[in-house]
Image 1 (cartoon, helix red, strand yellow):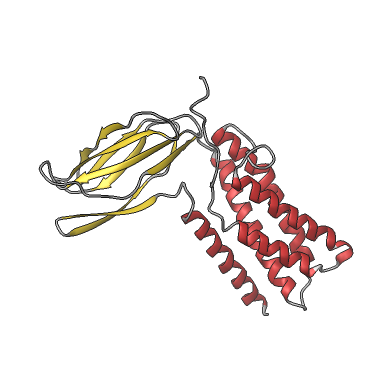
Image 2 (tube, one colour):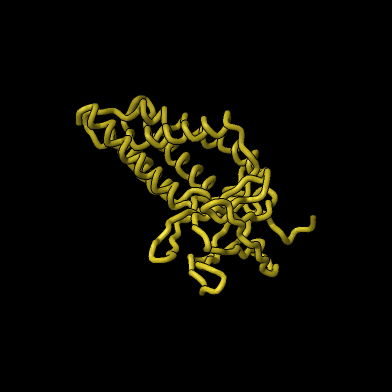
Length: 264
């Protein structure tokens, strides 16, 4: 395989998996639609917010459309609270009270074309998670390095399939990048956002942390198997496939979650 085609294929596979992971994650805004007067409006309901203030829900809806939010703390026996949407120009805006880091609210949106009209269904309940702000000097390198690690993981797998290439150097770079992104910067991101550096196996159930650990262990096996410059193709292919598959798991599944039952 020519070098240009080799890297183009690696980039396309990595971009595709990264976009899929991002868009299927539980903190990615939920796309919904609502129809008024024969026209259908598409908009997004947020599922992530920062603890610095109330979460804002904005709905594009021309007058005289009105609506409200119903919300309560996630996984609690709280009563539902109703919060009216306030008109701001051609939009309706609602606010959900800020929560502690990793705290979650479950909410639903209700709309109707006018005061005397029937309700317009807009979809199921939405879960929103709050997080503390993460400095750009941590989150940007973390994202960049993890993407680079995924890219070189894919490239190493493709190189292992090509008998004319030795994937050893790509394996070394993959291990280095996954370590830096997943075990140095990753815990820093978690610490800033949710107050804990590691929430995966063996201390927790966070799938993002756990899948990073699994991928890294497979690459360590490929690294050891490739001692003295051996290509270790079966190990590299296995590590690359495992990394691709587990990083298709949506980001933030079973992530950090504040326990409201604990005493304050």
